[in-house]
Image (cartoon, rainbow over all chains, first blue to last red; front, side, top):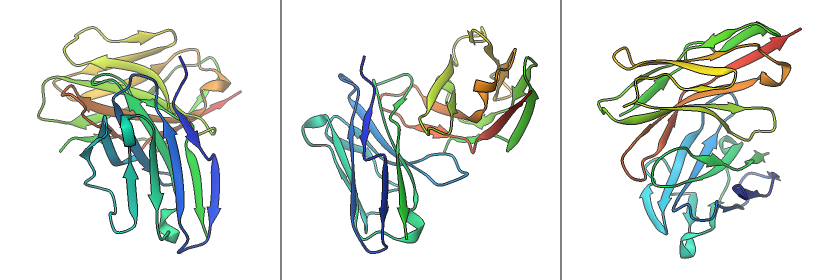
Length: 112
Length: 115
């Protein structure tokens, strides 16, 4: 089975610019997650979708971050405007209703 | 809220030896999953092993096994016959069995494997 696809792999932007990440989950996985992983830390959940509805976005900085999952399949995460502290790896994952999460390769974002 | 604690920031093991990584967690739930994920420099999170809380038997996957102590809320990972390819960050994670629950990670343990 094909895994979770993410793009781009790397992105370098200047502060105050905008950036978008894309994720295509494993086919049939209704639940999709975006995690932020700052260097040296464990991943932190930003937002969780169940189909195309938001289940948990309590840790999403909504003044600058947005995410959508149109049609309940692929998803985009946007940052606008970016800050230096947004430099991190952004991981997308998908899962069935229960069980393990399957992760993509992540996008490394550097904000200068 | 559920929390996961990994108290060993770094561990080192010689090739072919055995190492144990520690993890404790806090939850008020009785039914949940516990996982160990491996993250090599390529960044992808790779599932190593999983444990369902209702199962008393400890999970085993080839050279990887866990010691699950539900009452103590402890979930350690044992790697036997360590190989150079085992070098990575290892994250312990918790997930409640409720539908569409999230995965909560610990802070990770960096494992070095030496010759």
